[in-house]
Length: 206
Image (cartoon, rainbow, N blue to C red; front, side, top):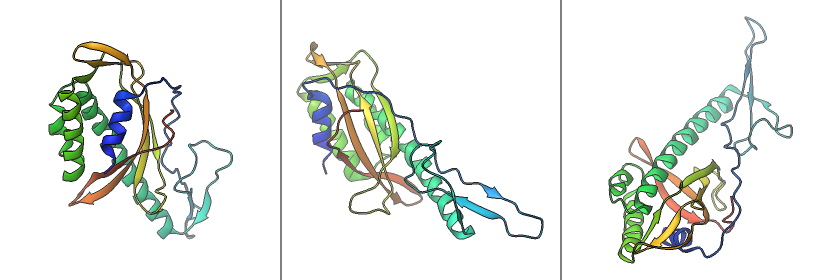
């Protein structure tokens, strides 16, 4: 579990980095073209990791009904994963500002292993006197992420921007925050998706 490293970078980064929000990719936008009352419709699909629409380099291609249905189901999974990611971010903001109420929100969003690691990480930061104050801690962007070792995995990457907030230690300002880019993997737990892993990505600029 690599979460602790990501938190440390976010809390203790020594330098500022530029951050320009990138557009959130829309889910695939296939169309169904009817060709006549007695003719099977033509289905159009876009690649799973296509660039954000509109993009002249990414065009829909004709696909079968089965592939189209699979794509729509995958789009729904990504939409649910993003909803969970954004709720997770809100819980993290609470914890980063020293509000332990964020811990309760994690239980419905992550696996027990991830939930425990996140809570322990922020608890350790609070014990050392670190919190964030002022400014806005924002999720600059979220987009689909292709796992290097598993192209079929459900994962998102996003940039958390701490730059307008101040890192405090026991009430004294240390420095302005920075940015951190992470990939979050998801797994199905019962009938729900849960965050199953968090990895800090090398490029921390947004």
